[in-house]
Length: 350
Image 1 (cartoon, rainbow, N blue to C red):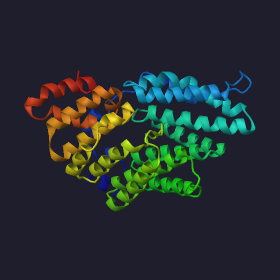
Image 2: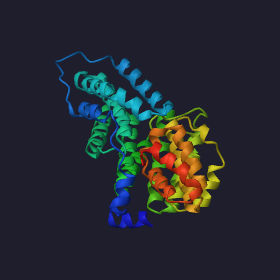
Image 3: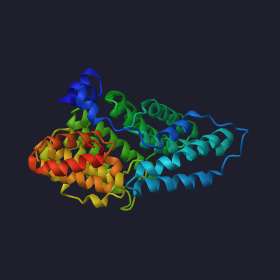
Image 4: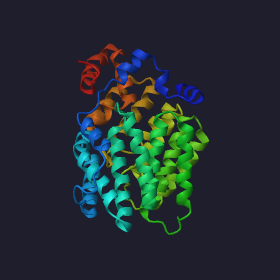
């Protein structure tokens, strides 16, 4: 209901939460690496100061950063330590290289900025996040790289959806889908992966708006794409893959207020099939949201505890998870001790 009211008023759902409750839930301070990332994004490179790093080296470092992000439980800490140098070197390369080298450098820069958006999300840095979104789309467009642009659009869609601007999120999402549809006949796995990820994103946005038919039509299209890709395929920025489609289905059921169906879908797969630790933790939080709709507080506590063990830096910055932990603190007495222990870990109690 809050989602539907927020859509009519064109405000984020968080704006409808009482100030006191919102302050508790949203009070996670910025990560220790945030100032260094902010400085890197605020500084413009000097083209004459130094030679840019070879693009293959930047690409290798970026690939290692993405792998570390998916493998680490403290993923914000890991990529927060890598991002400042990556941002600096990618920006310098995009400025200095010319011709085909510059186009490749701009595609790499867009990818670095996407990784930066993942670090900045849900931190007190909305100014940086929107700057990163715009820079990434611009760099991707100038690169001429189809996958880079689709990925930048996917990230922009995420930002607009999280801000409550669902109309814009859907509009740019559909623009991205339409652009890819022109060249699907001989498309690479990465193009197909982004095509599927954009459909999954459209499904998510539609479910937020309570548009069940639109949501499931887009989910079906994304699922069909996932089934056409190799079993081992995993799109590193969006996590698009076969196992993640069930996770998307759980989220759609939750957003559509179908708690029982969300929980039922979650039993059809093991969270361990999701290769990314942060994405796996988010899936566990979404399953907990399904149990919340059913009023099953013990299950919520078990799932949130499992999410914490999987990736503490996911649950610490997830507003849904933080809200559920606050609710558990005021829940049944038999759960309060464990709930308090979790609240301390998440940063909601001293």
